[in-house]
Amino acid sequence: MPQAQYRPPQIALHWLSALLILSSIALGLSMVELDFSPQKLRWYSWHKWLGITILLLSTLRLGARWAWGAPPALPMPRWQARAATGVHLALYVLLLAIPLSGWAYSSASGVPVVYLGLLPLPNWVPTDKALAEVLKLVHKSLNYTLFVLLAAHIGAALKHQFIDRDGLLRRMWPARSAKES
Image (cartoon, rainbow, N blue to C red; front, side, top):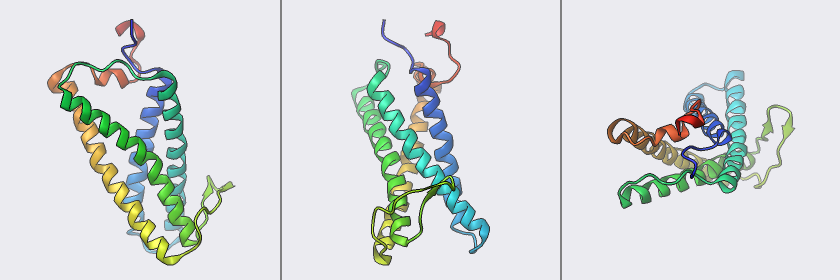
């Protein structure tokens, strides 16, 4: 019998990623309005740490998805299945591209990324003010795209839970025992 739910490590990585992504978005939106201060510099560091952690977790999530796959698709109209596949693929791409674009923006700005205040990460693009401006725009645009796709992802999960009542959300919900599957 095929698995009816994602595996516990996949569920844990999903919800930890969700928490960190929402925290990073909130921090990112809040920090840009601050006047230059030690607090603003701390928040930028935290935002970068969250981004690198999200990048690492996303890599683990892709590995888990490759190793364990996903539960079989639930019956739904073909357009919904295609939309779900497209949104999930775009989310994975963004969860890799956004931290990398932020890291590149920091590198181009000449501001190092020191992960958790302990591990200096290499600058992987040259310091270049014009490039930094382009990368800042890329980073912001990717984040706004992520925000729209997250809204679609969450909206679809809620639709499946409360309108379709097809059990889709339970497949990724923590603390669901295998006996309930």
